[in-house]
Length: 217
Image (spheres, rainbow, N blue to C red):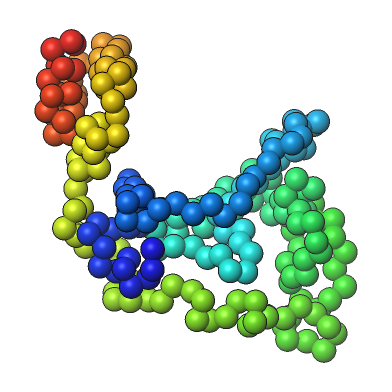
C-alpha cells in the first residue's frame, strides 16, 4: 500500500483488527522460511529466546500501528526483566555477525569492551551510518500526534469485515461449525447480561448467524 493511499484509505489501514482486502492489495511472496532443525536444549534455545519487533535490519521499519509502537518498547523491557539487561549476549539472541555498540555495563555482560563509552571518539569506535539508515526512508510525521483515538474513516466499524468473513468467505459447512462452536462456548457458564450482549454482537455481524446461535442455545 503506497503511503499516499494509506492516508486516505476507506478504513484505517493500521487498525490491527482490520484486514487489507486482497482485491485491493494482493499478497506478494517475498521468500520462504524453512524450519529444518529441532532445539536440542529447551532452556538455552527456547526459554531464553527473546523476540522483539524493534530488532530491524536496514530497509525495514515500524508502521504507525499504535499497538506495534507500544510493543517496540515493552518487549525489550520485558526481556530485561526476565533475562537480564544483557539478554542479547545469550547465544539464542546474539547476532551472527559482530555488533559494536556503546552498551557496556550491566550484569552478565560477557563481551569485552575496550572502546570509549562516548561518541564520536578518535579510537575507532562505532558511529552512525546515514547510508544504511537514510532519513527519507522512514514514515513522515503527517498531522498531529496525540493520545487520542484514530480519526474515523468511511468504513471504520466493528462489524463490516466480520460480516464479510462470515457471509462471503465461509461456506455453509464452515458457518455450521462456527455456530456450533459459539453455542458450545456460550453454554459453558455464560450468563446474563453477558449472554444477551453475545447474541446482540453476533446479530450485528450477521443476523441469520446470530439468530441461529440464539435458537440453538
